[in-house]
Length: 240
Length: 108
Image 1 (cartoon, rainbow over the protein chains, first blue to last red):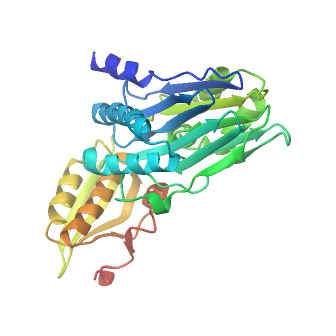
Image 2: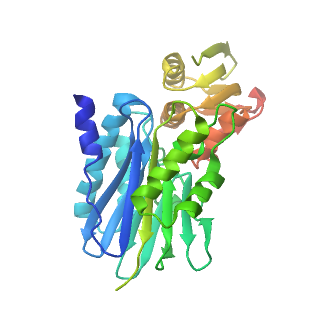
Protein backbone atom coordinates (compact mmCIF):
# COMPACT_ATOMS: atom_id res chain seq x y z
CA UNK A 1 0.00 0.00 0.00
CA UNK A 2 2.74 2.45 0.95
CA UNK A 3 4.43 1.50 -2.31
CA UNK A 4 1.35 2.48 -4.27
CA UNK A 5 1.14 5.85 -2.52
CA UNK A 6 4.81 6.56 -3.09
CA UNK A 7 4.59 5.54 -6.75
CA UNK A 8 1.56 7.77 -7.17
CA UNK A 9 3.43 10.75 -5.68
CA UNK A 10 6.47 9.88 -7.79
CA UNK A 11 4.42 10.03 -10.96
CA UNK A 12 2.58 13.21 -10.05
CA UNK A 13 4.10 15.94 -12.22
CA UNK A 14 3.08 18.78 -14.52
CA UNK A 15 3.30 17.43 -18.04
CA UNK A 16 4.77 19.96 -20.44
CA UNK A 17 2.05 21.21 -22.75
CA UNK A 18 4.14 23.56 -24.86
CA UNK A 19 4.04 22.61 -28.55
CA UNK A 20 7.74 23.43 -28.64
CA UNK A 21 8.75 20.29 -26.81
CA UNK A 22 8.09 16.58 -26.66
CA UNK A 23 9.04 15.19 -23.24
CA UNK A 24 9.23 11.50 -22.42
CA UNK A 25 10.68 9.52 -19.57
CA UNK A 26 10.96 6.15 -17.93
CA UNK A 27 11.48 5.38 -14.22
CA UNK A 28 12.13 1.76 -13.27
CA UNK A 29 12.93 0.95 -9.63
CA UNK A 30 15.01 -2.17 -9.11
CA UNK A 31 13.14 -3.18 -5.94
CA UNK A 32 9.54 -1.90 -5.99
CA UNK A 33 10.27 1.52 -4.51
CA UNK A 34 13.35 3.68 -4.29
CA UNK A 35 14.63 7.21 -4.03
CA UNK A 36 14.88 8.06 -7.71
CA UNK A 37 12.55 10.53 -9.31
CA UNK A 38 11.86 12.71 -12.29
CA UNK A 39 9.74 15.80 -11.79
CA UNK A 40 8.31 18.33 -14.21
CA UNK A 41 7.06 21.59 -12.72
CA UNK A 42 5.21 24.27 -14.65
CA UNK A 43 6.25 27.81 -13.73
CA UNK A 44 4.43 29.70 -16.48
CA UNK A 45 3.22 28.96 -20.00
CA UNK A 46 6.74 29.60 -21.24
CA UNK A 47 8.89 28.25 -18.42
CA UNK A 48 9.13 24.71 -17.08
CA UNK A 49 11.45 23.12 -14.56
CA UNK A 50 12.65 19.54 -14.72
CA UNK A 51 14.45 17.56 -12.05
CA UNK A 52 15.99 14.10 -12.33
CA UNK A 53 18.00 12.34 -9.67
CA UNK A 54 18.10 10.13 -6.66
CA UNK A 55 18.06 10.42 -2.89
CA UNK A 56 20.80 8.40 -1.21
CA UNK A 57 20.03 5.03 0.29
CA UNK A 58 17.56 2.35 -0.66
CA UNK A 59 13.97 1.30 -0.15
CA UNK A 60 11.35 3.00 1.96
CA UNK A 61 13.74 5.46 3.66
CA UNK A 62 15.05 6.77 0.34
CA UNK A 63 11.58 6.93 -1.17
CA UNK A 64 10.25 8.88 1.83
CA UNK A 65 13.08 11.40 1.39
CA UNK A 66 12.15 11.61 -2.28
CA UNK A 67 8.50 12.31 -1.48
CA UNK A 68 9.47 15.03 1.00
CA UNK A 69 11.93 16.62 -1.42
CA UNK A 70 9.41 16.69 -4.26
CA UNK A 71 7.02 18.56 -2.00
CA UNK A 72 9.68 20.94 -0.69
CA UNK A 73 10.84 21.88 -4.20
CA UNK A 74 7.32 23.08 -5.02
CA UNK A 75 7.06 24.94 -1.72
CA UNK A 76 10.35 26.73 -2.32
CA UNK A 77 9.32 27.58 -5.88
CA UNK A 78 6.35 29.47 -4.48
CA UNK A 79 8.67 31.79 -2.59
CA UNK A 80 11.71 32.10 -4.84
CA UNK A 81 11.95 32.83 -8.55
CA UNK A 82 15.74 32.59 -8.65
CA UNK A 83 16.80 29.24 -10.12
CA UNK A 84 20.17 29.09 -8.39
CA UNK A 85 18.75 30.22 -5.07
CA UNK A 86 16.17 27.45 -5.34
CA UNK A 87 18.93 24.85 -5.54
CA UNK A 88 20.80 26.49 -2.67
CA UNK A 89 17.70 26.31 -0.49
CA UNK A 90 17.13 22.68 -1.41
CA UNK A 91 20.74 21.93 -0.45
CA UNK A 92 20.20 23.50 2.96
CA UNK A 93 16.94 21.66 3.45
CA UNK A 94 18.52 18.28 2.72
CA UNK A 95 21.49 19.09 4.98
CA UNK A 96 19.43 20.21 7.96
CA UNK A 97 15.92 18.89 7.37
CA UNK A 98 16.37 15.29 6.22
CA UNK A 99 17.91 12.35 8.12
CA UNK A 100 21.66 12.42 8.66
CA UNK A 101 23.60 11.10 5.67
CA UNK A 102 20.90 11.93 3.14
CA UNK A 103 21.96 13.59 -0.10
CA UNK A 104 20.61 14.19 -3.59
CA UNK A 105 22.51 13.48 -6.79
CA UNK A 106 21.00 14.66 -10.03
CA UNK A 107 20.19 17.57 -12.24
CA UNK A 108 17.97 20.65 -12.11
CA UNK A 109 16.90 22.17 -15.42
CA UNK A 110 14.78 25.10 -16.51
CA UNK A 111 13.53 25.53 -20.06
CA UNK A 112 12.48 28.95 -21.26
CA UNK A 113 10.44 28.44 -24.40
CA UNK A 114 10.28 32.17 -25.15
CA UNK A 115 14.06 32.32 -25.63
CA UNK A 116 14.66 28.69 -26.65
CA UNK A 117 17.10 28.35 -23.78
CA UNK A 118 17.75 25.58 -21.28
CA UNK A 119 19.40 26.50 -17.98
CA UNK A 120 20.76 23.73 -15.79
CA UNK A 121 22.66 23.02 -12.60
CA UNK A 122 24.53 19.75 -12.32
CA UNK A 123 24.19 18.39 -8.80
CA UNK A 124 26.06 15.14 -9.37
CA UNK A 125 24.32 13.96 -12.52
CA UNK A 126 26.37 11.36 -14.38
CA UNK A 127 25.23 12.40 -17.85
CA UNK A 128 23.52 15.19 -19.74
CA UNK A 129 23.71 14.56 -23.46
CA UNK A 130 22.49 16.75 -26.28
CA UNK A 131 21.94 15.70 -29.86
CA UNK A 132 22.31 18.72 -32.10
CA UNK A 133 20.54 18.44 -35.39
CA UNK A 134 22.80 21.00 -37.05
CA UNK A 135 25.90 18.85 -36.52
CA UNK A 136 24.09 15.49 -36.37
CA UNK A 137 26.08 14.40 -33.34
CA UNK A 138 25.78 13.93 -29.59
CA UNK A 139 27.88 15.78 -27.03
CA UNK A 140 28.11 15.70 -23.23
CA UNK A 141 27.35 18.98 -21.52
CA UNK A 142 26.84 18.07 -17.86
CA UNK A 143 30.26 19.32 -16.72
CA UNK A 144 31.27 19.03 -13.09
CA UNK A 145 28.60 18.69 -10.45
CA UNK A 146 28.26 18.50 -6.69
CA UNK A 147 25.62 16.58 -4.77
CA UNK A 148 23.19 18.43 -2.52
CA UNK A 149 23.00 17.95 1.24
CA UNK A 150 26.68 17.60 2.14
CA UNK A 151 27.94 21.13 2.73
CA UNK A 152 26.08 23.84 4.60
CA UNK A 153 26.31 26.45 1.86
CA UNK A 154 26.65 25.39 -1.75
CA UNK A 155 26.09 28.76 -3.38
CA UNK A 156 29.73 29.37 -4.30
CA UNK A 157 30.18 25.81 -5.56
CA UNK A 158 27.43 25.50 -8.15
CA UNK A 159 26.99 27.21 -11.50
CA UNK A 160 23.99 27.81 -13.70
CA UNK A 161 24.87 26.82 -17.24
CA UNK A 162 22.81 27.46 -20.29
CA UNK A 163 22.43 26.05 -23.75
CA UNK A 164 20.46 27.39 -26.68
CA UNK A 165 18.07 24.85 -28.14
CA UNK A 166 17.26 24.67 -31.84
CA UNK A 167 14.58 22.77 -33.69
CA UNK A 168 15.43 19.08 -33.74
CA UNK A 169 17.80 19.16 -30.76
CA UNK A 170 17.33 16.39 -28.22
CA UNK A 171 18.37 16.40 -24.55
CA UNK A 172 18.82 13.11 -22.72
CA UNK A 173 19.71 12.77 -19.06
CA UNK A 174 19.67 9.79 -16.74
CA UNK A 175 20.61 8.38 -13.36
CA UNK A 176 23.73 6.24 -12.76
CA UNK A 177 21.78 2.98 -13.08
CA UNK A 178 21.73 3.43 -16.85
CA UNK A 179 25.38 3.99 -17.58
CA UNK A 180 26.99 2.12 -14.69
CA UNK A 181 25.17 -1.19 -15.02
CA UNK A 182 27.38 -4.08 -16.07
CA UNK A 183 26.61 -7.08 -18.26
CA UNK A 184 27.10 -10.67 -17.13
CA UNK A 185 30.62 -10.43 -18.58
CA UNK A 186 31.33 -7.38 -16.41
CA UNK A 187 31.22 -4.87 -19.25
CA UNK A 188 29.81 -1.38 -18.52
CA UNK A 189 26.79 -0.19 -20.50
CA UNK A 190 28.43 3.23 -20.50
CA UNK A 191 27.74 6.55 -22.16
CA UNK A 192 28.75 5.38 -25.63
CA UNK A 193 25.82 2.99 -25.78
CA UNK A 194 23.47 5.71 -24.55
CA UNK A 195 24.74 7.99 -27.31
CA UNK A 196 24.33 5.20 -29.84
CA UNK A 197 20.75 4.63 -28.75
CA UNK A 198 20.08 8.36 -29.03
CA UNK A 199 21.47 8.49 -32.57
CA UNK A 200 19.60 5.38 -33.68
CA UNK A 201 16.23 6.44 -32.33
CA UNK A 202 16.05 10.21 -32.74
CA UNK A 203 13.18 10.01 -35.19
CA UNK A 204 10.90 8.45 -32.56
CA UNK A 205 8.80 10.33 -29.98
CA UNK A 206 10.60 11.16 -26.71
CA UNK A 207 8.69 8.54 -24.69
CA UNK A 208 9.72 5.81 -27.11
CA UNK A 209 13.33 7.02 -27.15
CA UNK A 210 13.48 6.65 -23.36
CA UNK A 211 11.91 3.19 -23.58
CA UNK A 212 14.24 2.03 -26.38
CA UNK A 213 17.29 3.17 -24.41
CA UNK A 214 16.07 1.21 -21.41
CA UNK A 215 15.38 -1.83 -23.63
CA UNK A 216 18.93 -1.60 -24.98
CA UNK A 217 20.17 -1.74 -21.38
CA UNK A 218 18.10 -4.81 -20.46
CA UNK A 219 19.20 -6.60 -23.63
CA UNK A 220 22.81 -5.73 -22.87
CA UNK A 221 22.76 -6.94 -19.28
CA UNK A 222 20.66 -10.10 -19.81
CA UNK A 223 19.93 -10.18 -16.08
CA UNK A 224 17.73 -8.57 -13.46
CA UNK A 225 18.77 -4.96 -12.86
CA UNK A 226 20.21 -4.21 -9.41
CA UNK A 227 19.90 -0.42 -9.59
CA UNK A 228 17.03 1.93 -10.29
CA UNK A 229 17.07 3.45 -13.77
CA UNK A 230 15.53 6.77 -14.79
CA UNK A 231 15.82 8.36 -18.22
CA UNK A 232 14.42 11.71 -19.35
CA UNK A 233 14.29 12.73 -23.02
CA UNK A 234 13.37 16.22 -24.21
CA UNK A 235 12.92 16.72 -27.94
CA UNK A 236 12.92 20.36 -28.91
CA UNK A 237 10.45 20.88 -31.73
CA UNK A 238 10.98 24.62 -32.01
CA UNK A 239 8.50 26.83 -33.78
CA UNK A 240 6.95 30.10 -32.66
CA UNK B 1 25.64 -11.52 -0.89
CA UNK B 2 27.98 -8.59 -0.32
CA UNK B 3 29.96 -8.57 2.90
CA UNK B 4 31.82 -5.94 4.85
CA UNK B 5 34.47 -6.60 7.44
CA UNK B 6 35.85 -4.06 9.87
CA UNK B 7 39.08 -4.16 11.81
CA UNK B 8 39.76 -1.52 14.45
CA UNK B 9 43.11 -0.21 15.62
CA UNK B 10 43.70 2.53 18.14
CA UNK B 11 46.39 5.10 17.35
CA UNK B 12 47.79 7.90 19.45
CA UNK B 13 45.39 10.49 18.07
CA UNK B 14 43.05 8.48 15.88
CA UNK B 15 40.95 5.35 15.49
CA UNK B 16 41.78 3.35 12.37
CA UNK B 17 39.00 1.38 10.74
CA UNK B 18 40.30 -1.07 8.14
CA UNK B 19 37.33 -1.69 5.88
CA UNK B 20 37.08 -4.56 3.41
CA UNK B 21 34.27 -5.42 1.01
CA UNK B 22 31.36 -3.41 -0.28
CA UNK B 23 29.92 -0.51 1.73
CA UNK B 24 26.27 -0.49 0.80
CA UNK B 25 22.74 -0.30 2.19
CA UNK B 26 22.80 -3.99 3.13
CA UNK B 27 26.19 -4.06 4.87
CA UNK B 28 26.30 -0.65 6.42
CA UNK B 29 24.88 -1.04 9.96
CA UNK B 30 28.07 -1.76 11.92
CA UNK B 31 30.18 0.60 9.82
CA UNK B 32 27.70 3.42 10.38
CA UNK B 33 27.53 2.82 14.13
CA UNK B 34 31.31 2.82 14.52
CA UNK B 35 31.90 5.90 12.38
CA UNK B 36 29.18 7.90 14.12
CA UNK B 37 30.35 6.85 17.61
CA UNK B 38 34.10 7.24 17.18
CA UNK B 39 33.95 10.61 15.42
CA UNK B 40 32.32 12.12 18.51
CA UNK B 41 35.58 11.92 20.44
CA UNK B 42 38.33 10.86 18.03
CA UNK B 43 39.84 11.46 14.65
CA UNK B 44 38.77 8.55 12.46
CA UNK B 45 40.85 7.06 9.64
CA UNK B 46 39.03 4.87 7.13
CA UNK B 47 41.43 2.55 5.33
CA UNK B 48 39.54 2.00 2.06
CA UNK B 49 42.22 0.04 0.20
CA UNK B 50 40.17 -3.18 0.35
CA UNK B 51 36.80 -1.62 -0.46
CA UNK B 52 35.61 -2.51 -3.93
CA UNK B 53 32.46 -0.41 -4.02
CA UNK B 54 30.54 2.22 -2.06
CA UNK B 55 26.90 2.94 -2.82
CA UNK B 56 24.92 6.08 -1.97
CA UNK B 57 24.06 4.79 1.52
CA UNK B 58 27.76 4.29 2.23
CA UNK B 59 28.66 7.69 0.83
CA UNK B 60 25.97 9.21 3.04
CA UNK B 61 27.62 7.76 6.15
CA UNK B 62 31.05 9.00 5.09
CA UNK B 63 29.67 12.50 4.41
CA UNK B 64 27.77 12.59 7.70
CA UNK B 65 30.85 11.32 9.56
CA UNK B 66 32.93 14.06 7.94
CA UNK B 67 30.39 16.71 8.98
CA UNK B 68 30.10 15.34 12.52
CA UNK B 69 33.88 15.54 12.77
CA UNK B 70 33.83 19.21 11.77
CA UNK B 71 31.12 19.90 14.38
CA UNK B 72 33.06 18.00 17.07
CA UNK B 73 36.48 19.45 16.28
CA UNK B 74 37.67 16.08 14.91
CA UNK B 75 38.56 14.85 11.44
CA UNK B 76 37.51 11.95 9.26
CA UNK B 77 40.30 10.77 6.97
CA UNK B 78 40.05 8.59 3.88
CA UNK B 79 43.20 6.53 3.47
CA UNK B 80 44.50 4.57 0.46
CA UNK B 81 41.29 4.59 -1.51
CA UNK B 82 40.82 1.69 -3.91
CA UNK B 83 39.69 2.48 -7.45
CA UNK B 84 36.11 1.61 -6.52
CA UNK B 85 36.18 3.83 -3.44
CA UNK B 86 37.79 6.70 -5.35
CA UNK B 87 35.21 6.47 -8.11
CA UNK B 88 32.40 6.69 -5.56
CA UNK B 89 33.96 9.65 -3.74
CA UNK B 90 34.63 11.41 -7.06
CA UNK B 91 30.97 10.98 -8.04
CA UNK B 92 29.92 13.32 -5.22
CA UNK B 93 31.92 16.20 -6.71
CA UNK B 94 33.53 16.78 -3.30
CA UNK B 95 36.73 14.79 -3.65
CA UNK B 96 38.64 18.01 -2.93
CA UNK B 97 36.78 18.51 0.35
CA UNK B 98 37.54 15.19 2.06
CA UNK B 99 40.75 14.64 4.01
CA UNK B 100 42.59 12.16 1.80
CA UNK B 101 45.78 10.60 3.16
CA UNK B 102 48.15 7.76 2.29
CA UNK B 103 49.49 6.95 5.73
CA UNK B 104 48.34 7.35 9.34
CA UNK B 105 51.44 9.46 9.89
CA UNK B 106 49.57 12.20 8.02
CA UNK B 107 46.87 12.42 10.70
CA UNK B 108 47.14 15.83 12.31
